[in-house]
Image (tube, rainbow, N blue to C red):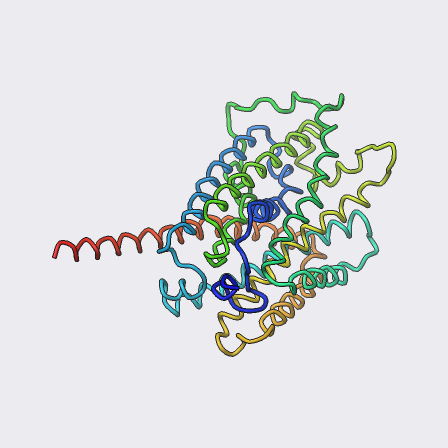
Length: 387
């Protein structure tokens, strides 16, 4: 089709039609809430941090407006060639190297973090490294379908996991819920580490910036703006909902000692027709994990293809090279990093810094490049008209 000839390259990265509202909104929401949702309540703990979630959501809204504007402006660099024309070959090479490192690190931490949950709660005798490799193979099975089908899988990933949220609703009306734990919302003295907590919350809203790597023809700017606003608002609702549930159930002091409070709450859910719900709910999260890591794997393949230029531009060699890199890193993480609880927490902290950095720099950077380009062209036209 005409769209396929103008968007990306053939094969993995060809896109036949622009993505719709649901695909864009669910993609952004799953990227935001995939892993941070599980441990964010214990990082916040204090009721005043509800304001931090609202503040981060407001700042994220500004980022969303910049991302949508980047797709609306013709002058904003789009795709690899647009970045090369704007930044130059050398800077673009460094930019792609940094992007390859970012997506590989994010994919490994997300995948091994989920593997660690399954290992400690469901199957203690499970070999974590082997399970991580099997999970990566599931990601490859999805990613091999190509960028278009993988992104549209967002609808399945969202529907396959959002139903879990409804099982937590009874905690809001439980007699054991102590709503006094929500007070005071405005204490006399701010708790220590409030800005570190904001950094984590800000990182928890990251994810939409990865859309900037898509070609402009693949996204309708108007649909993108509406979809990202809806996704951002729903993400903020999810964070506040689960934080309030955990805070009223555990209390601030005990909540701080919980590593994964939302996962531990599963054991308190009582249904007349089912027991051991963690055997069902925790595997359900694998749908979102496979989906997000598959997208990151495709981004890594795209970065390798651009870095290698003509040497690996044909066929699926960049994709399989990205798979081998992630396979090696998964094996290394499972063998030397994740068995040590302290090292695993350090990597999660580094992921927070990475996500906060990319969500701060990329939308503003692309927006600034587009604005500067527009100003330059306006000055050239204005000078030509005057002469």
